Amino acid sequence: MKALVTGGGGFLGGVIVRMLREQGDQVVSLSRGRYSGLDALGVEQVQGDLADQAAVIKAAHGCDIVFHVAAKAGIWGSYDSFYQANVVGTQNILTACCQLGINRLVYTSSPSVVFDGSDVEGGDESLPYPVHFEAFYPQTKAMAEQLVLAANSPQLATVSLRPHLIWGPGDNHLAPRIIAKGKSGRLRRIGNRPCLVDTVYVDNAAKAHLQAAESLTPDSPVAGKPYFISNGEPIALWEMVNQILAAGGVPPVTKNISPEIAYSIGTICEKLWGWFKLTGEPPMTRFVARELATAHWFDISAAKRDFGYQPEVTIAEGLLRLEIWLKRST
Image (cartoon, rainbow, N blue to C red):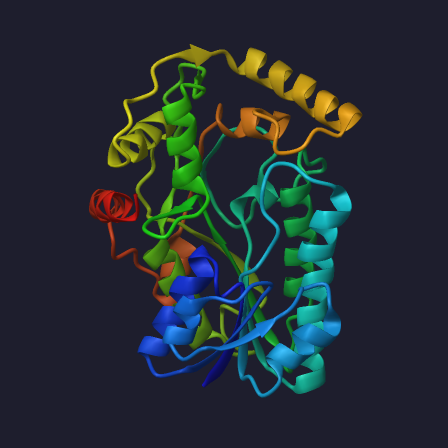
């Protein structure tokens, strides 16, 4: 088949591209930049913005399926920047599918679309969207996911995957940020509760996308549904953070602050960054304070049942691979 992968030059998108090429599929990547690694894999690259409908339609032309992975992530930025990338970009993907007769769409969502600031322990796909969001990323991702699921029809089968805290070799977001903050001495535990969280090794997350695609037909159990994706190994948050720090040769974080203080700091930071138009991300936000002080792990039995998802790389094996990659890349 011929597949369009949005964000094919990114972390998760890049692994999805590699796996598609390994099974002999043609791949087109839509990204804002150009990547030599994709050239080496024989991937056709279209440079453009998700918010540019013409660029999206150009990239999708002749494709049989779309893996819509690209998004604007992060904890800070204007509402419009998140809305254009995540909502308008997804609307453009849906328009392209309809105009070009593409009949399968696998969308990369996030568990944060159901995060309301409280503990989630063993939650499944029946969890509702919250009434209020404390960050633009989960808000716009939830809006986009609802568009994707509502678009499911006999002409276009759609599915939404919610991988939680993706990490592994090639990570350009989670592990590097943790390690950089650990090296700077600015990392603090939030609270003393041993909150369990889910994570997912990048190859497991990518494989889930291919498995969902294989099972996706208009009359399949997969069509029109969201699925949580993780390693199925809930782990204490700060234990996982310390293991990532250890993989990067950084001492564990031991200092802590209370959740209430972290939330207050986040509130103050957001006001300062908003008032004075400060550049870069604030060191803390309300959303991050809530995330780091709560449990969030999920029941992945629906993905196992409906499209055969089974995590193949354990956290222990993944950490070994991450350590090797970090040593080679520094």
